[in-house]
Image (cartoon, rainbow, N blue to C red; front, top):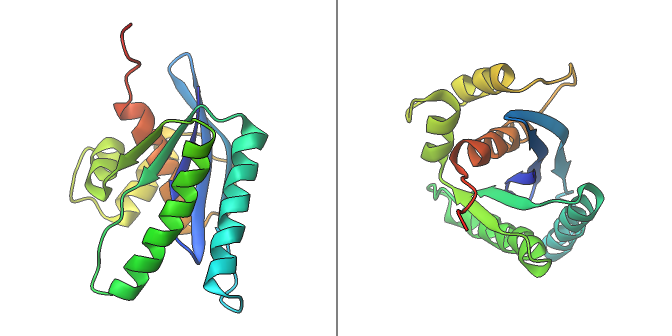
Length: 160
């Protein structure tokens, strides 16, 4: 089973494709997709949507996991991230992929076992939980990998 995990944003989007076979998670692909602040916001949303659809098609995705929005003091940023999340989620829903959403606390607990873990704690545990090559990764990319690991830690196949 392959999950596309997303750390949403409009400036940077963390993306990870993780596959699980025989109780082992393997990172298939990851990146931090960036858009330019020099183009209109709506164009940025369009580029994000196109890229997510490309990843879905390229990697034959089965499931989709995304971090829920954490509202901070900056409402303007939160609203723009909400719009980006809508564009991102639409790409999965439009092709019939089930979407799972996780709170920052759920991700921290699933990856570190501790709900008050720091970003650094999460990143250290990601490196222990899944084999990563030596490629330098931006925080958003590591966060997406953590979201994918959370999906596999929580997801249970329905009993038919």
